[in-house]
Amino acid sequence: MPDLFSKDEPNVSQKSVAPLAERIRPKSLDEFVGQEHLIGAGKPLRIMLENGDVASMIFWGPPGVGKTTLARLVANYIKAEFYQISAVSAGVKDVRDIILRAEKNLKRFNKRTILFIDEIHRFNKAQQDALLHSVEDGTIILIGATTENPSFEVITPLLSRCQVYILEPLGKVELERIIDYALKNDAILSRRKIKLIDRDFLILLSGGDARRLLNGLENAVKLTKPDAEGFLTVTKEKIQDAFQRKYTLYDKQGEQHYDIISAFIKSIRGSDPDAAVYWMARMLDGGEDPKFIARRMIILASEDIGNADPYALTLATSCFTAVDYVGMPEARIMLAQTATYLASAPKSNASYLAIEEALQDVKNLPNLPVPLHLRNAPTRLMENFGYGENYKYAHDFPGHFVEQQYLPDNLKDKIYYKPTDIGKEKEIRERLNRLWKKKQR
Image (tube, rainbow, N blue to C red; front, side, top):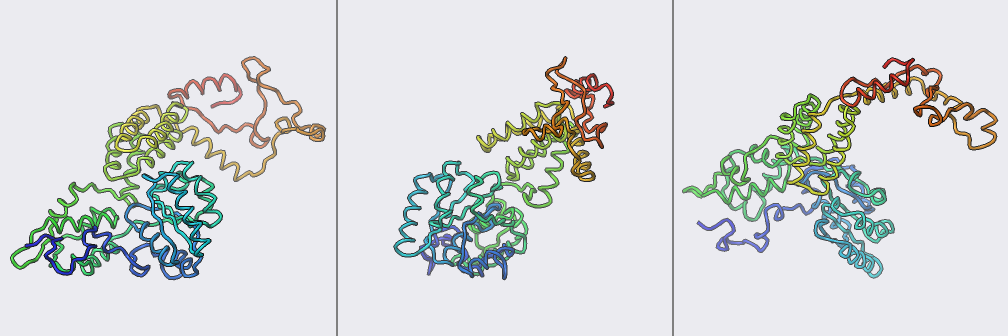
């Protein structure tokens, strides 16, 4: 029996050497599966294309949801020159060379140029700066693709010149459509007698990634021997062999994502470092963005530890920087160090409670006047009105402290921050009690 890609099979074109995902890449918006909120009838991207007025944009979404395909479709739709580069391997010189070609296209042929940058979040500031002028004057139409939040990874001047479109993970129905299309329409698979026994398992292993789905399907078919009648019965075992790993249930965009990050945070808050590293391992093994985990620990360091151990915030912030510099798989070490420290640290939510209560008062009692002695007095007129009068400069007094009113009159005796008697906050509480003898914390 010939191999799946054997030259003995008739009508196998040169395209057969390409992966399945490339062979069946959509050629039109109507063939594209998913992202109906962008390309459905009356939706923003379709309207933009129908009007022929395409602006620079960034596609933000998980892997395998169609970012590259959409960029190519946009270029085809408006008949633009299309250049694709990867931020991992390209540099400023590559960008400038394309910009020069784009200028010639525009001046000589009145033809627009689309520059598609995959993983644009990996471009540093200098590389992103090199794009600004050409994007702004319309020399190029930039389409960036990123799996990271562009608010954090793309410089503000460039972000302000681009429309951000969020691409959603593909659901079961959409992935089933892709499987059916591949089996019926691919030049190679459509000629094989394929029985897919457990497509739900294939979908589960794909994690919503269409490219991963199709690669897994193609590899599973390759691993399957035909029976006497020529049928290829693709079993669950062959699918698992194709993916070369056992499945860890973790949907980065679904219920598991929220349940496991919740368990992780609550384990740290509950001072259980063992549970914390377990749930972290679940997330990392499932492909979670390590910077997402690091960001959540920064929030937790202030919300749940606060001044009980002020170093916690410093460590969490340093962890994010280290993860950004190093990347996976080594980033797991910094994440584990930080998670175990935070879980083992003394806990206090006093700062969090303080700002929440203060915000509530601001909403209920808006625009309370600043006491006159605390107001700024940059002009003689303001001085005449008493601005800044009788203000006591703390450093002129023993211990660099003097008792005076800092809150508005309506709230002058209010206490928002109530330090606990845990960790560093115990010292803070004792000091504040010594200073503010009239206040009980």
